[in-house]
Structure formats: C-alpha cells, structure tokens
Length: 406
Image (cartoon, rainbow, N blue to C red; front, side):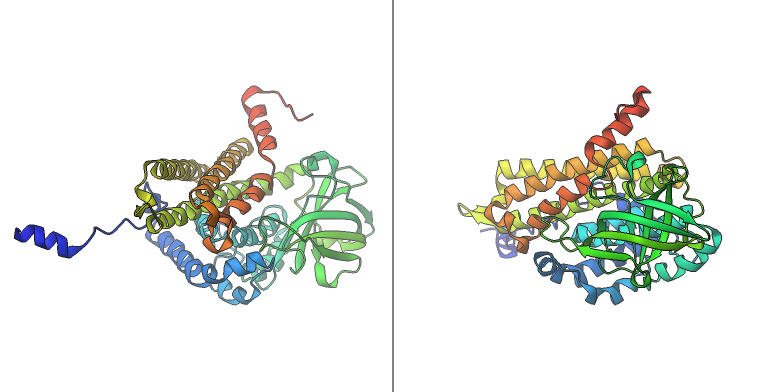
C-alpha cells in the first residue's frame, strides 16, 4: 500500500459542504459596516431565537423574553434618517429582514409591522412634530406599533372600500369600525389606524395610544396555521376620540397609505426570500445527515435535483430583491416594481418550502425540524401585504395601460 493511499484512508471521508443559501455571494455587495450589522443579526437569530422559536410557534405565543435583547440589536428604524432611527440603506434593511426570516418569519413580521408599517407611516406621512414625538421611542422599541388597514369585510378593496369612519368634531376626530389581522395589536402600545373621512370620503391616518384610549379594544385571533408567533388581533373602535394632533398630517388619501405599503410590500419580498434560505439550508443539512439504503439521501439524484431547484429559486429571488433595493436607494422604486417582486418571491417561496417539506418526508410536518414551520408560514406571506393576484393586476395595469381591478 502506498503512503498516499494510507494517508487518504486515515484522513477519512471528505467533509460535506456547510449549507449556504447565498450561492452567488451577494452579501459581498454590502459594505463592511453593513456586513457587520447583518452578521450581528444572524448571530442573534441563531443563538437567541432558533433554540426557542419552535416551542413558541407550537404554543401560538410571542417570545416577550427576547424583547430586551432584540432591542439591543439597534435596528429600529432601519432605512430612516434622523429621529433616533438606525438609518442605513434600503439594501441593508432588506438584508436584515432576510436574515431574520431565515430563522423565523414571525419575528420578521413583528419587526416589519413595527419598524416598517407603523414607524414608516409616521416617517412618510407624519408632521415634523409627530416624527419628533413618536419615532425616537419606537426606534428604541420602548413603544411598539401596529398598522390597522385591513377590515373584517375589506381586504383587497381597501383603496375605496374602508368601512371604518372618521368624523371631525372640533379639535378631535371620532373613529368607529373594526380592523382585522392586525399584527402586534393584542399587546402593542401604538396603532396606526386608517379610516374614511365621512366629509370628503378620503382615507386618513391616525395615531392611537391603545392602552389609554377609551373605546379601543382588541381581541386576539386564535387557531392560525401560519405565523403563529405573531399575535394578530381584531380591533374594535367604538366612538374613539383622537385629537387632531394625532392625525397623520401627510396622510390625506389612499395614495399616502400606498407610499407606506410600497415600502413594506418590498420588505415581504425579502422576508419570503429569507424563509427560502432557511428552508433550503435546513433541508440540505437534513439530507446530508439522513441515511437510507446505506448512504446519505443527499447522494441520490432525485434529491439533488430538488435541492438544486430550491437553490435556484432562492438565488433568483435574492437577485431580484437586490435590484429592487438599488432602485429604492436611488429613489426610483415604483408600486408596480414592488408588486412584481412581492408576487414572484412569495410564489417561489411556496414552491421552495414545499420541496423542502417533501425531502424531509414525514419529518417535514414536525415543527422540530424547522421546515414544517417555514412551509406553513409561507402561506401567510403569499397573502398579506396584498394577494398574489392583486400584485399581478398592479403590474398588469403598468404594462398595458389598462386597470382591471373591477
């Protein structure tokens, strides 16, 4: 036996590659400072969230114990300048959302609702005084926000069909109606409520302090099969009096609401890309370790075919979202561009996580293996922030010149 042969035998089998969902090394396009932020978020999610999240998901509970350490990441208000916000590029905001979703989509949704929808409404549509008052404590996670647009009977038709009303009464407004599927609402501090002004029939935004405002109540929604960690609620507003000082001064029509949705719809594209990363990496690791017929199932042709398809979806979505982030940072992002990304990435995420669940066999329906959680959560991302079909109609109007909504 030659020395080379003996050395090869003693060295043992070649180690398999570590699962890596960034196949095109897109993280290298971040600055060193941005990579440090993303790395800090990944470490946090791996060490603090991953060990406990499946239990919370199974229990339909939110991990309040993690809030103090989550605050210390310093990512409140990513992408916003001033007012105590974290600042940074929209690309960094997207990568952070992707990293959070790579471990858990519910935590990403919690972050997106607070930092994206609630803070974004004030940042984009609030007066200077409102920004100074609300954004700093929200950036520090001392005040947590939610965003109330969807109603029990109004989802896709919110642009012209809101039933929640706002009536001017001197220096106040009287709000009546209900909001449904409102993430964070059962426990948060501040709600951004969108209502139809009965005087001019336009949609207007209001800042409501949940815990101290008479007539404001929330019922937690139960029995969800997706995003179970996020606490969704049905808000009831009964003659809720809101001072004019708490009306978003720049939120005077649905066009102003849509500015916020454009930004957060784009974030859902990053989140759905993140859950694909998480599902791909968890699936690849499983196939490397799971043996059948005397060898790892990762060595089987049909398994490798599905893994390659999963990775192709992940990579395509990453590249699409990266270009969208560049457009956003250049001030060129349009509604139809955000809509195309949201539709494509959420549709591909359903496909990707379904292949992952398939490769795990029976273990794919257990939360213990993570992929089952990604599989369920992908369904919610596919529908919220505007359904797949509505996104395609937004794109369709842009490319044909004809609106086909009604």
